[in-house]
Length: 212
Image (cartoon, rainbow, N blue to C red):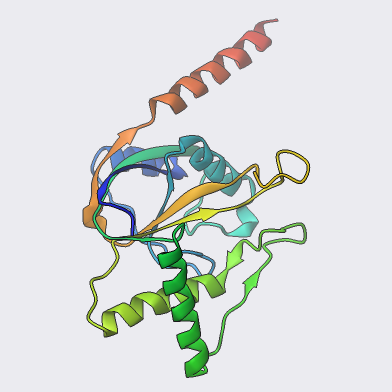
């Protein structure tokens, strides 16, 4: 799929997780939630720390939605440098075709199928994508059964949010997401200086208004 190389990715989490990762005291564990649309793996936002921060903030504000297994009290973002040699890239026709073949396999086997569902009444994006997860996990099972090399990671564009212009195809929360399946691809974690600068500016503005 995509050519091997270095990728800058971001993970939204609680500040305690961020600090433990930076100190080398923990590793990110693969997610296996029923709604993980790219299948099992560690989820990152590719090249977009702000979207990762918005996700962490949403998890904090919508605790009843159970979007992560760990609670987020203080939103934070940790950056990661990934070196991925073997992608499943869902922005390509080859990736989409392999996904379709895995779905056809489930149908041929007569397997009970999951369903992509809305997270809430106003969810037009069907955020709980259990069927997508089922198909991706079947795709990986088929590769293993055929003796093919496993994918290190799955990459996919997630079109989400409201159109930024009337009738526009550009949506407000669209992002590139990565489900990392091979932890050896993580070369290291780093602190997001842009986020620190943004938080410092926000704190300064709040303090300025308090003094008025």
